[in-house]
Amino acid sequence: DGGITQSPKYLFRKEGQNVTLSCEQNLNHDAMYWYRQDPGQGLRLIYYSQIVNDFQKGDIAEGYSVSREKKESFPLTVTSAQKNPTAFYLCASSIDRRRNYGYTFGSGTRLTVV
Amino acid sequence: LAKTTQPISMDSYEGQEVNITCSHNNIATNDYITWYQQFPSQGPRFIIQGYKTKVTNEVASLFIPADKKSSTLSLPRVSLSDTAVYYCLVAISGNTGKLIFGQGTTLQVKP
Image (cartoon, chains in turn brown, yellow):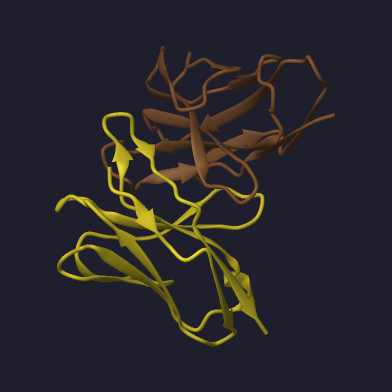
């Protein structure tokens, strides 16, 4: 079945460490996105990529980095510069970025700083 | 960009029909209205989308009046497993494809 796979589901990070969240899709979607969700909040865009080897900052990119070396993969690195990284992270891909449908989300990674 | 307004929360009982209304201003005539469902610690899941009038699928109906200033998601005969947050989306951000999420409506279905 086609879909998006995020791993790990739970991740713990020590202060000052960088961690990388994995996102893989087999939907042949060009566009991929990383969102952050805090308790009781909607989703906020961190980074997005519309094509391989290209990505753009979203609304809250500070303290995060991404790469898009392959169409299927869009990993997110949470760096030590991100002061409040504890959150639920969601990866998504879309068949058509010009419409608000056709988006598929992964099951998320919950990151906790310990 | 169009902004959406939904009730923060709603309660219902099993077997009842639930209607969640979303208000949206400045929606373009060719914009689709899309609803997503999100369970705790999971990604949002597409429920239904519509352009105008009425759309029905196996899980929900979507009613859109002619002026498109609001839309209503209708869930027939809800069960406990329908307890979730429901998001109404009408906008994307220019060429980025960024979905504009509000706070959503938390639906609590009681036995």
